[in-house]
Length: 146
Image 1 (cartoon, rainbow, N blue to C red):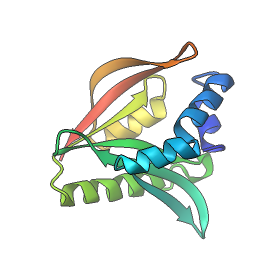
Image 2 (cartoon, helix red, strand yellow):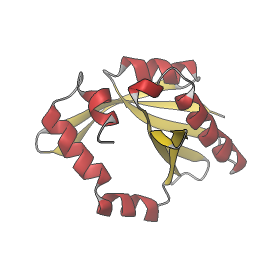
Image 3 (cartoon, helix red, strand yellow):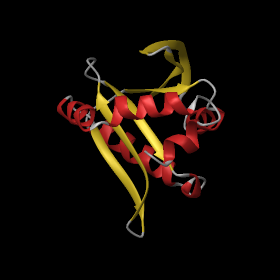
Image 4 (cartoon, rainbow, N blue to C red):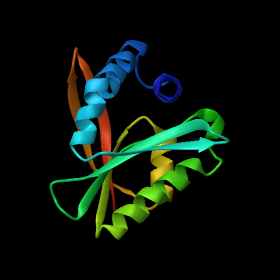
């Protein structure tokens, strides 16, 4: 995340907010809590080199899942890695009787929005989440029915 987050978000949010969010979401304690709460993490590699990662979990609604993260390093984008990771998640979710998949994406992240739309996700809501320290996540919630 130390490489992929600045690559992804530098054009959208400040460097200070990127550092704040990395610490908030990727500290050891935060990652342990995510795993305790049912998040499934995957790392995608090429020739034993990590190129990206993602995670998903079931929501409180038993047939709805949420993709929390799909990040691919710039040099791995447009190589099918994001699609492979997304398809792996969707396969697992379907095999566990999931009917709906949701995710959040920054409203300014046009490349990610286009990727999800290409994969049949639709914007269902626009939301703003207060992260503290005067930082906000200004996101779309997107959903796909399986």
